[in-house]
Length: 358
Image (cartoon, rainbow, N blue to C red; front, side, top):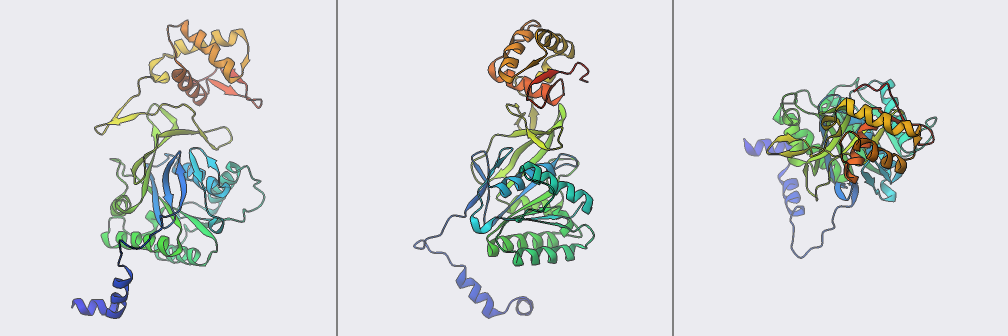
């Protein structure tokens, strides 16, 4: 029976040929996979491998991956992501299985704006496919043909890999999909980044396909809302083969683009429990004290540059017995901006919004 199954799936001759081709030798030279995506100085994506982003619904996973794509199209830095794709691997393929063409187009325009590019024409290195209306089998085959027929492809995003299977808890389907990702990335020497939801009840990626992703991906990123500030999302690694990076946070600014929260102090984790950082300007300072301090600072002058603002806030918050170090003032300003307690105008000056909601 075993020989019969082997004959229908793979001939003995083919299996022997693959066996010999798979042998490794200590005397041979094997090249390290080219590094194409980093978070800060940590490698999260190499050619010939795949990675993943996980997160609960509305955690802004697609906004985060838009930054990765923009960095790849620019071969530059967006948020904390830096991309260095080789000249013959500059094309980015984006597969969307969840959204309508209208909403997919909004993602395309967001990516172009993150690159600082016009939104009235397509980017020559960006291919975007909306596959919501197709079956899982059709989505797989369309993706396969795109990967093997597009020239100069280097990065592939699969936004909604759950939609490549009928049953996310099927070991057979899940193993088949992950095996395909490994085959495609190896044969085409590309990097695939897949997006998957988390379970509602815990932090694990959803279904058996999530388990397989965690086991085989070179990096798994977690995108989650910051508990004390639902407008802010934090990115950290769940699994990474390279050196880990410091978690970072971003919010969606008034232009509907992800914006790095400079100096934001993220929560750390201890024994599986979330532990608040030593200084949390939102939780540690009352609304009344914020109002007193801000009204004091902006009664002296109506707008500030960043350096002037830090000096004014140091003095103003001391009036309500809040002592601020350099690190704390950075975290404070980030929170004030995020909560729209202070706002920036076109000249980058900061003004006080006395109608803020705490």
